[in-house]
Every structure is written in C-alpha cells, then in structure tokens.
Length: 193
Image 1 (tube, rainbow, N blue to C red):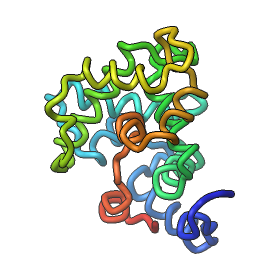
Image 2: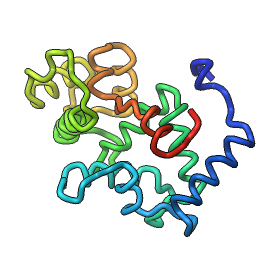
Image 3: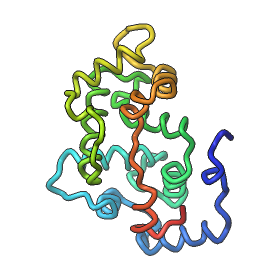
C-alpha cells in the first residue's frame, strides 16, 4: 500500500517465531516493562530528558495502557519502526508530540519536538550537516508554523502536519521522528529487518 518493496514484505512464520523467542528471552514474564525498555535502549537513569522521551515512546506503543508491552504490542512497535510507511510514521510522530491529546500541536509541543530531535541526534552520535543547529528551537518552530499552519491559528492539526511534511523536505526533517534505528534494533534485539 504505497510502501517501498523492502518494507512491503510480510513477516513469515519463521520471523515471527524468532521474534517470539527473542522477546521471551528478554521478557520471561511475557511483558516488556518500562525499566526493561530503558535498559534495552541504554537510557541512563541520570538523564531525565532521555528518560522522559523513552517513557513517551513506550507509552505510545502500550495501546492497552497496562504499563507493559505484550508480544503483540512489541511486534506492532517493531513493525512500525522497521517497516512502517511514511504516513504511519508521521502519524506516530504527531501522536508522540501531542502531549495534551487534543489532536493539535501548539508551539510549545513543536519546540519540544525540535529539542527531542536534537537530543536524539546527539545521543545517536549523528552529525548534522544542516544549518538547523545554528537556529534556535524558537526560530525553527516559527519557520515550521509559517510553512505549515495553513489557517494560521497557532496550532498544527494532523492534516496540516501530514501535508506540510510531505510538501517540504526541510519541514519533513523537522517533524518526522527520524530515528534510523533499524540497524540498532537488529543488532541489539536480534530482530530481522
């Protein structure tokens, strides 16, 4: 459905069984809890911002809100990270940053998004080749709203978020949770891409 060929392949039974074995090794209780999730992602307990970010990711995948990821939630999360199409990833990014759950991103939420992206880039030792590091989060936020906020109400709806990201490459880079974790997941979790 509009996905690249490499991402469009369905997981076969052997891959699902391997995921299950790996999951049960990491989580013998059958549930992945937040402290285990943080350990897997290597989040130090001293980093409050990284910890909060990982908690946000964890809770975005905990669809039944039981403070644990069961195997189905785990597979759904890996599928989104490893094989999700652009629109699904953008919707997930939007959900991640819509802290108050009102279906709109305000300037505060967009600035948080920008700060988290910078944190991720430095945490993953990714060198930014763009001039965005010279811009403040407020300047980046102002530019995003100038380009994306179609009705100029000071809030980005999901529709504006999706359209803006897909129309403008710079906006896409600012709004998408662009964490290329495929290699990391495969290496550290024994998952198949």
